[in-house]
Image (cartoon, rainbow, N blue to C red; front, top):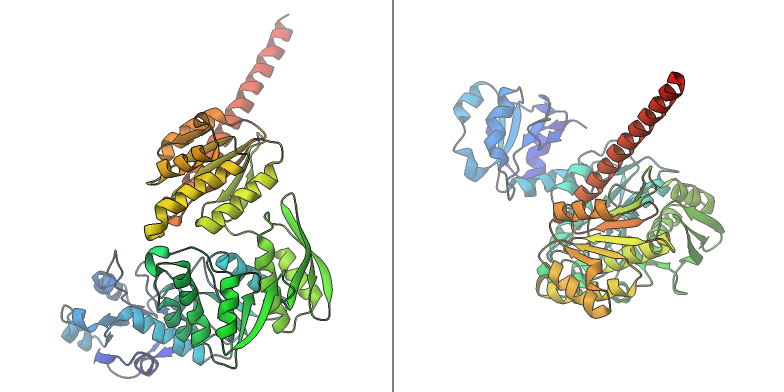
Length: 490
């Protein structure tokens, strides 16, 4: 969609510092490396980088319009820019201005919005909703996990006239964030997957998490609808106090959209989807019975949008796991790696480890984990509990890295694991020991909070295995060649 100077000023309440006339721009970008000359550059001031440093660079590369913060504007050659008819708009806060432009873009399109939040499963649920809704409607969804005050606006700024629904994700680590994001996207349907002990550093307690997630319902229009998890006691508390329309999903009899006889079958889950007037069998190519809840949330949205049971089934069965979220890698030598390294909290840890136990069967199970972050004062006790929980599963080898590695070890030992089963160290030390210890048939789960970068171990093991297999194949070929030559000589 074309943006005019008037659009930008109306959306942001900013001030035109230089430039003449009502110029037009083909889009909005915050990336100085990828912006096109016909786009408007918004200089975001982040925690690590300040894009105001690159404003002159984008102008030198042909960009004709920029949005900057008023406090930074004195450092730019505005008189020269005015003579060049470059447009510079000043605002109090460029991040807030980005959100205001996204809200403006959302308002000028006919597309409706589904917003997903929750302690775990947000991104998977969002992608499942996208898979379902796209069976009938043209949809837009977030790239990666664009779920904060920069990522959400960037998604909404991609809305175009052909989109009918936008499926977005709302994240938080402090109170007030979900409120701001909800005001930007104004959802027609809001989804809360669950409420658990995450981001406790910012919100203090699980009751704080509930209040933070409840901001979605507080900001939604009373005429809109919330899709809520009937199996979660904290979500049900929010449902009782909300003024919006409520649709419940889950295995509870209270749920309108239910799953009957959910079961994990190897690397798939299956269940009978129960809708008010229809039902069908669904099989999804993802491991872990906990995924059923995400699928039910997506089914509830599909039901609200008028999709048939068969259309919902087709969408769910076309869903594929997202990168670093319960991705299973089967190596050529028969080692199985479950890559769930995208993030971690106590709830998702237990679900993932339970899934590993189910997948491996009688084979050996290996767990490679990093710290669970943003738990605040609860961090030590929750890592201790994690270790004790791990000991309840039949895990043959536990590798732990991070500031709380010794706490996890303490819990595991207290729970009954033997000391020789546990190794603490850096990711490099873990990798070196792991490749000496593993053997064909082993199942390895790799998981940790985003900042721990646990997927590095996955990538290194896969690359090592490829090289090892290649060397083995070359060595075998050489032996065959030598053997044939020996026979010829004879």
